[in-house]
Structures are given as C-alpha cells and as structure tokens.
Length: 440
Image (cartoon, rainbow, N blue to C red; front, side):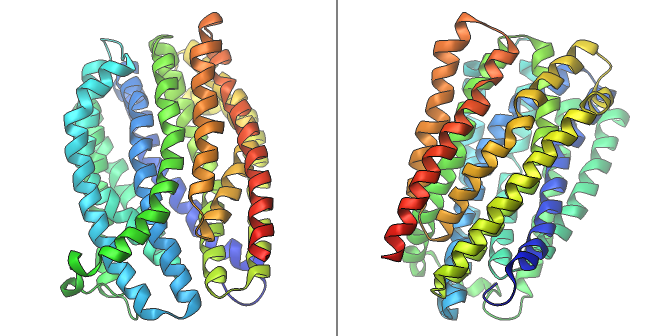
C-alpha cells in the first residue's frame, strides 16, 4: 500500500471486497428469492420490510469497525506495532459488547418499531418474527465485521472473503432446508442467516487466533481497563462513520413507512429491487473501504501525495462501476425480476425502482468515495454532518412535504437522486477545503 504502482494494488485489494460484498448480499437475496418462490408475497414483503432495520444495524457495525480499521492502518503505516496490537484487542472487546447490546435492545424495541413503520396486518406477524430471530445473530455479525476490518487494515481481504463465501453457501443450503422442505417460512430464513453468521464469525476468530505478528489475538490481553483510551479513539472515528451510514437508513426507514402505505405489492417490488440494488452497489462500496484503508496507511506514513492519488483513483473506479451497474440493470431487470415473482405488477414496480435508483447510483458513488477518503485521514465528523443534512434531511423533507401531494412510487423514489446530487456537491466543496488546510 505504501510503495509501487497504485492502480493495480487498489484493484487487487478491492476485488476480494467486491466478492465479499456480493456474497454478503446473497444472504438477503437468497431469503427473498426462496421465500418468493416457495412461500408467499407476504413472506417476501416481511423480509423486505426489515431491510432498512437490518441495514441500520449493519451500518452501526461497519462504522464502528471502520474506526478500528483506520487506527490500525495508521499505526502500521507509522511503524507503531504495539499500538496496532492494542487496537486489535480493544476492537474485539467493542465488537462483543456492541453485538450483545444491539441484540438486547432490538428485542425490546422490535414491536414498537414495526408499529411505527405501519406494517400491514397481513405482513406484521411474519416481519416481527423474522426480525426477532435475526437479532439473535447480532453478536456473530458484529464480530465478523470487526475481524474483517482488522484483517483489511493490513491488506488481507481474502480471508474475510473465504469465510463469507462458505457462510453464503451454508445460508442457501439452510434456506432450502428450512423454507420449502420444513415449511418454516420467514422464521426459517432468519434462522438460516444466524447460523451462517455464526459459522463465519467462528472461522475468522480462529484465523485471528492463529495470526502471526501484531494482529494476533491473545485472549489474556482482552482487558477493558487497559483499553479504555483506545476504545475512545475507535469510537471517535467509528461513531461518526456509523452515524453517517445510519442516517441513510433512518431516512430509508421513513421511506419504508411510505412504501408500506402504498400496499403489499409495492412492498414486495421494493424488496426485490433493493436486493439487486445493493448487490450491484457492492463494487462501489468495496472501493470506499479500499480508499479508507489506502489513505489511512499512507497518511500514517505522512505520504500525502500518495493519499491524494489513491483517493482520485478510487473515485474514478467507483463512478465507472456505478455507471456500468446502471446500464446492466436497465438491460436485464425484467428477466431478473421474473425469477423473484410471476406477478406482472410487482415486476413493473420493481423495474421502476431500478430506473430511479440504480440508474443514478453514480451520484451516490461520488459522495461515498469522498467520505471514505476523509475517514482515512481520521475525519469522520465532517462527512457525517453533511450526510445528515444532505441525505437524511432532504429525504425526510421530500416524504413529508412533497410525497403527500402526489402519492406514487415513482414520486417517492425521486428523492434518491436528488439527495445524492446535494451530498456530492457539498462533500466535493468540503473535501477541497479540507485538503487545502491539510497541505498548510
């Protein structure tokens, strides 16, 4: 990361991340596809209804783990090996605590949240059951994200990919057992996901216990009292990053409530389209993670010119991938959604979401990559504040002020590209200002 040609190193680093993201999304895709084929539209809608809630939790885990990733990458770049080792152990402690806390709080809040979302009566029992069972796997999901972030800080993206690949296969096999054979429906889909993440976390934990060098996990060093200062530093970077991601999903929760008000078919269509949408966007997301790690290590080594080149290359790659994703989705969407459902109305509505969201995702790629570069420098608060106003604020304003006067699915979806334009402009201005100050 610190020497040699950048573009090929970025591709080699990012490619396993792309594959990891794709297989991670296969968890949701398998649930949605198998439920749609072997159960009912209500079960598929139940999983789709929970997507923003699940995303909210994942953004929390990803954001906090990013704090560990940045600190370890900067320590390795600066040659502070002892600090890197201490951060590894602090990160594992934080992962265990966060996973357990989210599981406990989520179980208590599940029913009120479903009521607030206005889930239709025919979907509510399935949605609540799916979410409560899914929450049982949160300690494993959190541990996976933190260990993957630790390994990525040193440039290892292959080990997390292998673990998630095996977990994805396990999830699909369990879905096929629990849903069409045992008839457990949405509950079976959630249980399959939990068991798959248990296997994934166990595989990565074993890998960390057998690591050579500073990333090796020593259970005897897992002491909270000795890691408080590092935990605070992880949270100082990770919490704003988590908040930025969670703001997207808080706004999406409000959007989900608006989607729910349009009926079961819109819910099912949105669930199917969102599955494809996220699957395609993982190419961009992997470049965001790559950008943060490359900038973090080179900033630790105080190589600012290489930081700028890495950020520029990641931004260019991200925009190109997002544009190609949009073209691919527009050309293949009818055939893809025909596998999810045979209902022509659901297929038509799913295609509408692709046209308004995936086709314009290159705008999102610009803002996300600039945010990732800033986090590599250790600046998480600025991007989070901009995301709050540009993404969360604009979407909430659209739902409450514009959507009620013209209640169509297309009008609701229009807030996505508009909010991305606003975020990209503001983040572009902020990034240029930050870099001028950094150069002195």
